[in-house]
Amino acid sequence: MQRKIDEFLKDVNTVAIAGHVNPDGDCVGSCMGMYLYLRDNHPEIGADVYLEKPRSSFDMIEDIDKARQVCSAVRYDLLILLDISSQDRIGVAGALLKTADRVLCLDHHKTNRDHYTWLFNYPDLSSTCEVVWNFLDPEKISEKCAEALYMGIVHDTGVFQYSCTSPRTMRIAASLMEKGIPFSRIVDSTYYEKTFIQNQLLGRALMESFLMFDGKMIVSCIRKRDMDFYNASPADMDGIVSQMRNTAGVEVSVFMYELETGKWKASLRSVDKVDVSVVAQIYGGGGHARAAGVTMQGSCYDVVNNLTLYLEKELV
Ligand code: 5GP
Ligand code: MN
Image (cartoon, rainbow, N blue to C red; front, side, top):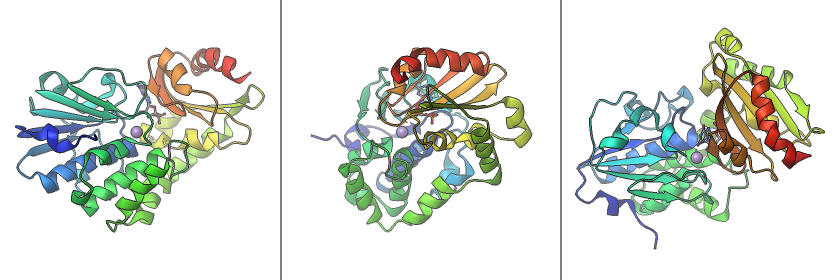
């Protein structure tokens, strides 16, 4: 039987909700969706939500300005971790892991193998928002909570395109839509809309991309000095790797940007054959079969060489 969030709230007075570093749409959607559900249905519980500074495209999400970037409280009765993939990615609320009485982790990353008081990890579900929805009473989901959950599902399914989308995902999206949410605006302003700088960076990454393995793999990178020139942050790189993946004939796309000199964040996407989470895990990262990420040291050529050691076997 599906378990519900209320079971985990018995004797709980304080709750912290936290996501992962550089929070994406599913992370923000699931954390804010859970926060708004507790706010609406359990006002007696003191709930705080922790998210690294969310990008401005998420501004339409209710109470996003309440998300805390600094962890001042020492402990909570319950820590709810959402979409984190692995313990070392908790970010701003990392210290709470040691002090919280109980930890409930809801996720959909097959690479999440850490231990918590409770871990409910469903790699077959499209998004952590879909996982969270299953833990909530649909009758008690408000319109604002529905907006947050819908946004997360939209982002992790690439607007219901990726293979992680299922009939069940669509039914959940439909039930959220029935709450009266502005679904077009959510997709437009949180997913498709880009700043001028983001589009320029996308253009640059595409211009400088190159193909490998008979056009089955596409690679590109943006250096720190170029990011500095555009005054760009990691959030501005969102979507570049997916656009590269749309190239005809490509099976795997690899996009990386320099976090600091000699340290690269690589994003990997696959169309339908290669499990890119395997190679990400080899180098200490993780994710899903079709979307994974990892941080690696060296020059960008070192990173490509190391990744292709494995990918070549899958692609040639
Ligand atoms: P992205 O490439 O968009 O950053 O991430 C793609 C997927 O891989 C996301 O589900 C993300 O949570 C996961 N991911 C990205 N980087 C890492 C990492 O360094 N470690 C782990 N465990 N997962 C990651
Ligand atoms: Mn997710």
